[in-house]
Image (tube, rainbow, N blue to C red; front, side):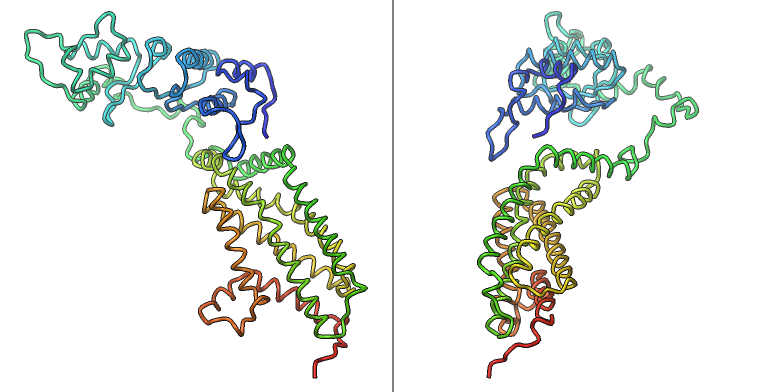
Length: 435
């Protein structure tokens, strides 16, 4: 769980959006109960309110909020914009008159056309010049919505000496752009020397690739520090399983002088490879849970590579710890070859396999984008890779149709490499072959 430090500004933001009563409650997900749907929308608004952004772009933020909360949020945004010199572009559907009065400028959109853009005090004058008058007791926001509608427009027609004809949205837009004031504004050329060099950004993200990667890297470290439980549980699971494996295949009960003993050791190696593969299935769930935030931010905050690269880098030390636990507990007690070079090769083979399986599960999670589908396809993929690894069924007995799967299976290469590393050692030089 991530939690922003409770400063005075953040506490004020919580009270304004009505989340102070559930400040210590988890947001929740499909698997964990949390706050309601309306409160989740307020959390999204709160993310913008406490951010250091100088320009805010909000779409239909009042949907799902009661009128009192919507007014408080809009009033807070108005004060923040005026005091801090920020800019807020907010789209609303049918705003109340109280919320409408909080805006400085408005942009009236209808059927894909800009009907009006400018100070809210002059919007009524535009329609009055075209023959449409807003009644005194009519909310201006409702008037603007209805005057561009075919079924409601006629009631505002004021020229009794002229017959009413439907005024299309295109005609409204043309009349607005033909105004003398608009012509004067658009007629002034842009003077580049008078503007700041940073006013117009040519890059998509506004910062360098190095700064993007550094920011995402720092965020991933923060997430890892605040929620290490999943990796701690995984390490405990590996420790317990490695101890059980060590006791089952204790070296005093193992021999190196027969084909039968070699078959047992080959089974142990296959179990090591399989366990290394399965130990990273937790990446399925963690990746799926992160995807909504990733898709929300990737378009304008950072590219996909800036998100995946730090994740991969930070996974390496975790993999090192997991593989170290497994190899340290199982290698020598089981009775694998005593040569230190074989031990190092064994270690790095499992390390590479662990990195591969972690990347594979993240790929499956990104492709399925659903927890249940990711679990199903992840398990299915692992079982297929195990089946085509060459241990359960030799490549000589595979149908030609499955040979492509055999050659592209990473478990086949891992199993062959780790078996070759063990059985070409000096301890297996005196094997009694079967007659």
